[in-house]
Image (cartoon, rainbow, N blue to C red; front, top):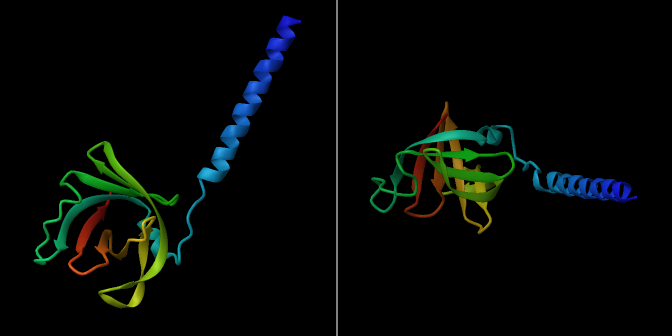
Length: 143
């Protein structure tokens, strides 16, 4: 009798665990939508190269270090790494937004606080722009 109860308890625990994992998988792993196929090219890993802009126009932002790289996932995660250590992450969606440098809307990473950065590609180079006066332009190259 003890053995039968033990087996039933283990089976019940395993069933609950599988159900819990299934719910997390279905609700936590939804890919974000993109406005067009070009916007989809942002997903992947990018090495930080440089920045320009700011008040003087000469750059100088310390947002990313020389050893930094970013990973932008189709699950809406913007991860920043310094070497092999992840130093930050934030959630985003992609929308077409107005830009201070273009008459046409550009694809933008829109963060939970409403701030957004537009982006463009030139070959394997990503230009990520803060969309406010005296904002910075960040240059990344595909890993």
